[in-house]
Image (spheres, rainbow, N blue to C red):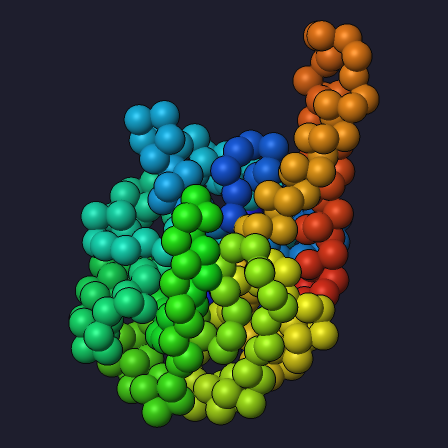
Length: 286
């Protein structure tokens, strides 16, 4: 069933676990994520990124939204369809028009007041349609999707967080405590003390981006200190690559059946999804 981000994160924060949030691009990813979450009785957040949606003359928008909504309608666990890292109002509006139940507006590169203004505009727009809004304060850096540019981290400041939430009315807030997007060049060292300070002043659930590759013990500590949503993408891409290599090595015939081609990919994806659900303590929470 399709629900809002606010619904699942309110429960997660109150009960001390985090909900895994998976970026996906195709039906195989959508089905595997939702079916594995159903097996684990876990809520799931299905996320899309604009570069993936722009494929096929923009048809990715329609196809990905339809795949996630169909998967959500087929199960009795909470599923969120979330627009990840929207940068402007037209992108948010497009997601709203396609039935997304949650959007993230990323004004983290902007000055504080400009970030507040942009986020408040999105909140007013989305809340009119009953859609949740995630924002970002501080900046989670790392590599972009093409692995061609790297941005630096800017840690979230506790004295800014309370003002930001109050002035914007956002439903969840992504904070920067030392993670990075993409594949890590070296292991991160999360600033758990800073997270503890942020959670103490936050009126909304906190989100951690850059969850792929972060050591499990640091993830568990982050959940204990207030993280209610963890974003995951690179680990899924790595899993798909492993499955693809297995498929290529298994089949000598030139016309294998599709379910035989996809089985190793689905198996590798499901293993990662299952692992993240249990790591975050979300199993059995749906």
